[in-house]
Amino acid sequence: MCGNVYPGKTAMRPEKIRDKEGKARIRKGSKEAKKIIRSDESPALHPLTNRIICGDARAVLPRIQDRSIDLIVTSPPYNFGQSYAQDPHDDTHGWNEYFENLLAVWRECERVLKPGGRIAVNVQPLFSDYIPTHHIISRQLADLGLLWKAEFLWEKNNYNAKYTAWGSWKSPSMPYVKYTWEFIEVFAKETHKKTGRSEDIDITGDEFKEWVLGRWSFPPEIRMKDYDHPAMFPEELPRRLMKLFSYKHDIVLDPFNGAGTTSLVAWKLGRRFIGIDVSRQYCDTALARITSAAGNKATSTDIPIPAPVSDNPF
Image (cartoon, rainbow, N blue to C red; front, side, top):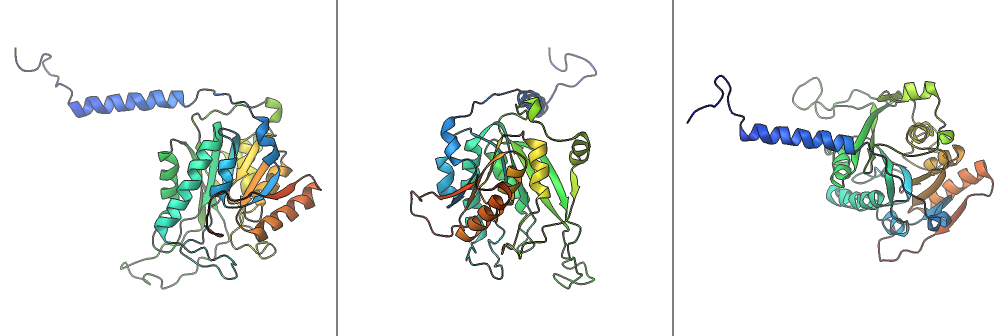
């Protein structure tokens, strides 16, 4: 017998069958991504907690145990391909090298995250060269097997978006788009669910209702000159991320710690921290800020670089 077995119905095309199978796998994957995976903490990590570590993140991160970090909050340095005035570090790299260096750090971040651990990356769309930085970083994290969890738009409110003739003025030939926000990309490892004790939840109901909305609005850091740092996020940014995505006593890592805002907020919120930065100046600044708030309970250390790398790889 030839033709259609069921009159009035057409046989499903192979691509349709593949599409249905793919959707089924996605649904199953979504369910699997909500499972609870518990991870015990090793005492071997304790000597590194509540420390500012001065060193290249690519050299320091391998010293941290697998599956040991609860939350990573960071913002990769923006001075690849551009120079900051008064920045003592000549960190300019081509874009390819920039993203290769970042990928090396992300690989280590994925390794050290606990199951259910999260990584939150604050990044702005860079204005030069039309490089969609937040998309590229998100793709890097997804390609490492991390689960996309959220994207926040951080509206900074006070960006000085002057109308200029960059690109073109009053012409469709090459309009130049100005951004008043930055992105925060959040990914999870292996599962979207994170385990923790109910008594270690410190987010309020009002905070939760406000912060789960994907658009945040608060001003940028206004004290960057005080800390001699060209690109700091304000304390409000890691405060929201830590209360929304971690429990008290969790370990929070920042591999690009800069002047120490992530570590400082972690301490204030009763989390443990590991802050890594290649700049001795910024490490000293971070330590001074934390010890001012915490007394002498935070310490600083240099971890020897085990392999030859440049002094300022980023």
